[in-house]
Amino acid sequence: MEESDAASFEAALEAWAGQSEDAPENSEVVIPLLRLERAYAEVARAAKEASLEAGDRPRPNPTMHLLEHAYRLAAWLRDGADPARPPAPGTERALVWSHPRDGTVYLRPARDRDLLALKIVVEGHDRRALARTLGIEVGAVDGVVREAEQRGLVLPGRSRLVRDGAGWPAESSDAEVPRRLKVASSFTLQWHITHACDLHCKHCYDRTRLAAVSFDEGVALLDDLWAFCDRRNVRGHVCFSGGNPFFHPRMVDLYAEAVARGFETSILGNPVSEAELDAIIDLQMPRYFQVSLEGLEAANDAIRGAGNFRRVLDFLDLLRERQVPSAVMLTLTRANLGEVLPLAKALDGRVDRMTFNRLAQVGEGKHLLAAPIEAYAPFLREYLEARRDLPHLRLKDNLFNILLAERGEPLMGGCTGFGCGAAFNFLAILPTGEAYACRKFPSPVGNVLREGLEAVYASEAAAAYRRGCRACDGCALRPACGGCLAVVHGSGRDPLTQRDPYCFYSAAPA
Image (cartoon, rainbow, N blue to C red; front, side, top):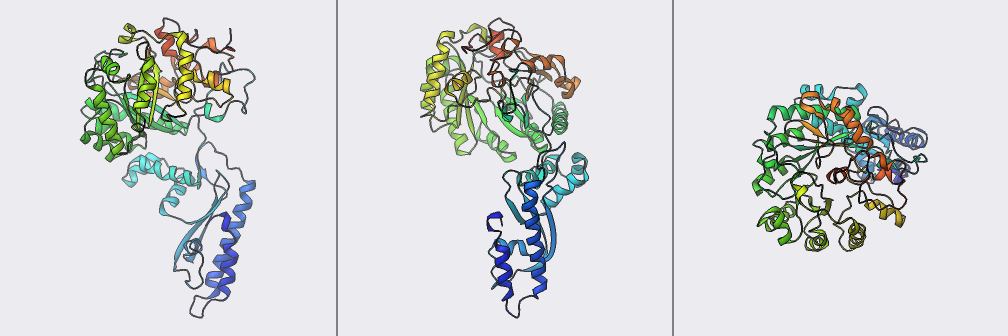
């Protein structure tokens, strides 16, 4: 029952006045109905007056009423309050509340999960300790609270992952910089659990041989990530990568541990077998499974090895069959600049999203030629136009914001949703625990296995990468841009003081 049919109370009360003789006594039903009606009216009034903003920690929705009565009235009202079919007897706890999203008033029977979530936030339970007591995973406890937040019964804690605005234009205001560019609701670890790989791509940025992370080290890191996210009221996201993450002997076990802690999961890798894919799906559907292509068959296989193109296409078909969200990433070079849109057309209907990164001339990629600077702006314009017919083409490069600003359209979030989110809502972790602000170039900020994630995130090195390129200070696009630090580094420049050489924004600071 929702606000739009609040008149059901009046209709139900009127109908009940003419009930049959064998129906329950008037007072047994009418009095609880009157109490529900009053609660409904109070909630509707409170929704206009109460503060439904997020607090420091999750808390119960202050508009909510919990009532208990001897008949199943909430379900009866929801089904139309037919007086010919009186409400079934039986103890019912009913919840009445206004959803903070849009003010809609709801009346629902209280489920055990709802009551558990309310108990957790009211009593301030340590969720890890509670999980141990109940004999369940902490992710299951978090899931109960998260579901109550989605239903509006619990107001989530305010995210503490907030950009400080350093380098933004002095006139930037809350109205000019939307919340989506300032406040993160999740934190991502791109976790390279092994460097072992079945390919030898010509643009690979790191072919060093490192021992795979051990299972015990991995579990400790996941616990550290859970605590880090809990302190900041954000959800953790673990993106499994490599090398080929499935070459880790305990990939599925580490994936299961991430799921057990309530993290979202995704995979950056190469095609795998049906059995390997199904083992992951059985634990939790990944947010996406990303594979790479570098153009049509000849161009791709010249970079990634003979037969790779066909294997990837077959795997994309498998992902679609299993309903796994799919993504294709292309590394943009001088050689494949003209391959992007033909590849996009070839993948139409076969992939959920496709995007690209510019080549960072790092590692083996330093031997390849980057896309010509003078050709880049025309390429971006052509790409934007192609999206009209190819909606799976997505925007990732921060410099698209130059064209969006020209068109008067809203700026996009860029590489990780915050322009360059390096060391803000994202860290890359190597098998050794070494943390990079960005995996595409050497950007070490500490070692999470030795120092802990909290200390690494608070390090001066991480703060410098969060601060970004000082040459972009004062630019009107700075909240959503900052160029690509990896491309700047690969071109032989200092990414923290020198602007992206591909920037073509006419109003950029001198």
